[in-house]
Image (cartoon, rainbow, N blue to C red; front, side):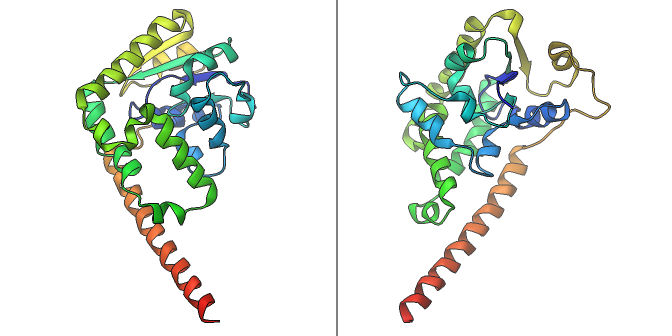
Length: 237
């Protein structure tokens, strides 16, 4: 389905999951970190592109099956994607940096730092690759580094600098800057789409994320128990 027609330059926790749902409603098939964590979508391509930025990247393969992309890892590759997809329209989701940092701290920072090596090893292999990619790519690795992430002012500066760079780099006629909580009107006008007869999605709040994370933690714990029992039974045979 590539090439990408719509690309999000905004960091995670700026309404990117709601935007993903909105773009899907408008007829796109939207790439997002949630999609990467749900099935094997070549996370190693993004990791390799980040670690070795001078090497050629098969972006069409990275986004195979999608014609839109938001959230990380996409937001970490604005410059090469701007060159690769010159006709794409860009969306920058923004929010107050203080509330953004608090949201990241209470959601994806916990997700990036709370898994033990044993828990990660119990995951399906594609998820292990996805974790490695996310820990390297998101916030330049600071998301998964408790010491670096604890420097709130530095993390907020990263966020602000990224957004200002995007505004200066992407041509104004190809960029729509959206504030957290916006609805359909400006988005649909920018994309040339009729406004749907449905409310704009409101998804992945801090509470919803933490509830989903708790369920995943329980699942992984049960998976580790099953693997432990299986190994024990095999050793007794």
